[in-house]
Image 1 (cartoon, rainbow, N blue to C red):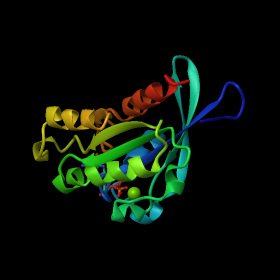
Image 2: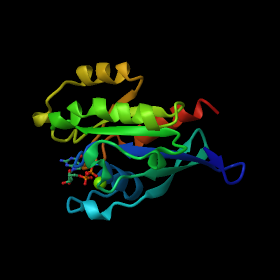
Image 3: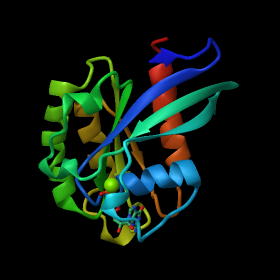
Length: 175
Ligand code: GDP
Ligand code: MG
């Protein structure tokens, strides 16, 4: 966490998870309130800034997104450097993306700062009929990894703002 001036906190959040789980759409929905189904993998940017309000304070989030390098379920130290929080995303309709989480948490434990807060995010909640595991099962899994848990839809926008707000509040507790 760094400070530009005493009233502006910048918190770095990194997004990780398998390709196609919806990381870029989550970021787009959060920052632009838009869902673009045509969004290509090539549009990946390093990071975006977005301000949220928590208890009357403006907090600047610097949110990092991957641009294809997640295919190997391993991301560099550089990406995680100084991260205050990590959002680990899986797709509620894709069991493989859930099975890959062990590898993601291993990658995080090796490369992310120890103090970084973690949130497991189940995306594509709008495709409820295709979900392969219950909310309870997923919550239990998240608890094992000392993670917050939330279910969102980048398509409808459901819970997206709340998820970032919860993770940011949790991060701010240490300051
Ligand atoms: P990334 O590789 O993790 O960045 O995934 P993308 O954000 O590129 O999304 C992958 C695909 O999933 C795209 O075809 C999106 O349109 C679709 N997608 C992303 N989020 C949602 C969602 O919440 N619901 C539905 N139905 N589709 C989604
Ligand atoms: Mg992407």
